[in-house]
Structure formats: C-alpha cells, structure tokens
Amino acid sequence: MALSLDFTNMFLPGVVTDAEWSESAGRLRGAHDAVMERHARGELGFIDLPEDQALLEQTTRYAERARGRWTDVVVLGIGGSALGPIALRTALRPFGWNGLSDEARAGNPRLHVLDNVDPDTITATLATLPLDRTLFLVISKSGGTAETMAQYLLVRGALDARFGARAVEHLVFVTDPAKGSLRPIATRESIAALDIPANVGGRFSVLSPVGLLPAALIGIDVTALLAGAADMRRRCVDGDLATNPAGTFAVLQWLAHARHGRGIHVLMPYADPLRDFAAWFVQLWAESLGKILPDGTSVGPTPVPALGATDQHSQVQLFMEGPADKTVTFVAVAGREARGPIPALHADVPDLAYLGGHTLGELLEIERRATAGALAARGRPNMTLTLDTVDPWHVGALIQFLELATAYAGELYGVNAFDQPGVELGKRFTYGMMGRPGFEAARDEFAALPQSDASRRI
Ligand SMILES: O=P(O)(O)OC[C@H]1O[C@H](O)[C@H](O)[C@@H](O)[C@@H]1O
Image (spheres, helix red, strand yellow):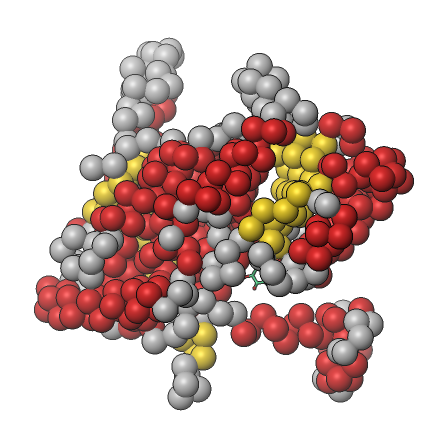
C-alpha cells in the first residue's frame, strides 16, 4: 500500500479502548456524512481539487510558457499561501533551492518564499535577486492580507523603478476569482492571474494554483501530485472506519484527546524532505480545530512539529516523561535501508565499530521504531504513517489525507473547521494602528487596553 497508517500503539492501557473504537464507527459515519453534505452544498472545494482539470491546465499552461525565462521565482504570501509551497519545495526539491547545483536544478528556477514581513529578510532577498530574471507570484486567497500586500508594494516599487511599463511581466497573481484587491489590479493592468476557487480556504489550498504553480515552475510533476491526492480521496470515499484512513486518524486523535486528555498532537517525520510538512500541518490542525463551541467552551488540539531523529535529542524527553497529554504521529519513508552505507572503520573503538556495515537509512528507521516502542512501553500513544517513497504522488496522497482528516476532526470536535474568527481581532488592531480607514474604532479599542506598565518591566 502506498500510504499506510499503523495505529497499534494507540491501543495502550489507559488510552484508546476496543469499546471506544467500536463505538466510534457510527461517529465517523456521522462526521463523513456531515462533511459530504457540506461538499454537496458547494462548500469544501478542497475535496474537488485533485480532479480539477481546468485548474491543472491553467497552471501547467502558464508554467510551460514561463519555461526558460526565469532563474528565480519568489512567492509573496503568508499562512496557507506560503506554507504549502514551502512544504512542496522541501519535499520534492530537497536540500533547499540554494543547495542544488545548477546542474541538479536542470534549468529550473530557484524558489524563494517570503512568508513574513521581516524587513531584513526581504531587503536582503530583493538585493540579491537578479531582477531581470525573477518572477514574483503574489499569492493571497483574500487578496488583501496586510503582510502580502506590503510585500507586493515593495516588490512593485522595485519593478516599476527598474522596468517601467514592463514591470507587470514579472508578476503573476494567484487569488480568488472575484473577491479582493488583487483581482481588479490584475484586470486593469493585464497581469496574469490564476484562480483559487471561491470555496477553497487558504490552508486547504495547496493543491490549487497556490501550491501547483510554484511547484510546476520549479519542475515538480503536479499531475502526479494530484493523482496521488485523487487516490487518497477514493480511499476515503465512504465513512467506514475499517477502510477510511483519514477518518481513522481523526477518530483516534479525537478519542485520545476527548476521552484521555491527550490534546497535544505531535507530527514527527523521520525524513528531512518532509520536515516542512509538519509546519504546514500545524496551521491546518490549529487554525481549523481551535475554536469556541456554541456553549462558550474553548476546544481544540495543539499541534507540535518535530523531526526525527533530530528531536530525539531534544523534545523526546518531554514526550517520554512529561505530562501524559500527547499523541505522536511518526511519518516514515519505506525502502531507504540501503542508502548511505556506513564504512566499517575504527574496529577497535566499540562506540563506532558497531555502526560499520549498517546504513544511514537503516539507522534512521531503527531509531524511529525504537522511539515508537519506547513511547509505547511508557504508555505513550503513537501511530506511524508510512510512505513508500517521497515523490509527487505520495506527497499528494499525504496532503489529501491530512486535509480530509482535519475536516472529519472538525465534525468530531463539533467546530467549523473552515473559518478562523480568532485571528480577526489582532488584524483589526493592526489596521487601526496602521491608520487604515474604517478601523478607527479598533485603534481606540486597542488604546483603551491596559498598556505596558513600567513597574512590570526590567
Ligand atoms: O491567502 P490569504 O488570504 O492572504 O491568507 C493568508 C492567511 O491569512 C490569515 O491569517 C488566515 O488566518 C490564514 O488562514 C491564511 O492562510
């Protein structure tokens, strides 16, 4: 099986019980039906992305036309408009854009993702780019996010100064088909623009042109990415706990949390290419599930990113002996046992000699199994997702798996997984303080808050 989930270590004494598991079959069926009803009403467009040929063609056509023209592609975006492109780049163009020789990049451009408004990073990035060979992708579902708009204004200023009327050739927008500020600018100035379907939310958008366009531009096979996602979608086509992997993951995480207080959900790939998937998953799980219920109760799991084997020397101590409030999901990659043969040197030094004749791939996988076993021995629940290999097909399947699991988990927690009202207040305060018209009340509300007290500063 291309992507499998081993959840044996969730059934430990004091964690998920067989009785809870059998009772959950009806619960998953209910969650699945609720998700599919919303989908049938035209919501949750992420479910359709794996089979959206029109968007795929829009993307590949643009990438084909751009081939050979650019040495550097820069994504301007934040949150869901940046984490997906970063995760795809790390997974499928591993070792970082700057670690690949020109030869290994096979003529594909380097991909930079700004993902913030730190003045030092942006100034340094813009200063080092060959502007005449650089394409900027302005990615924003809402077409109005302050950070992305600020990045755009900076870049636009530099492009206008350098290229005048031809500045627009260095820009492509990826945004909502109708809403937001970017769309009218694109229409007015004939800037290329690709669509994020209206019913696809930012953190569920990686399989739309948000992730597909940057990926296609750096030579990733986006058709295979969607094919892997479509396969996972088919595996999750009904709400049967015995066959639906995303449903199984969601139910187990929810049971561990709601019934056994394990609300911290660690995602720990044992593969460098998948390290940024953990950050992408953090936004998906946190922003979707951390909510207030109608009765006023706050709910939601806390996702934590980790990396094996690196975090065995950091966070694993806490996972083993800290509060029993966590689940750990390992992500393993099969078939790497022969990679990285370790030379048999220093036969007289026991601390080194036993490693000789093994491989790095073997060591990494054995360390993962040892950590999973050690956690289980201490009653700490864990599961393992195994990918046959890290390629576009498997990465697509992994994306769809975690997105569907999030949709199911939303139903299990009783929250709407597709909004994020909690981030609005901070945004309104920002707009107020930045002097955006219409946000004077927010500016005043912020000013009336208890301000920094000199006696409580050192
Ligand atoms: O893609 P955009 O509309 O610019 O949104 C970027 C980000 O903005 C907000 O902070 C939302 O909470 C995120 O879910 C979103 O990913």
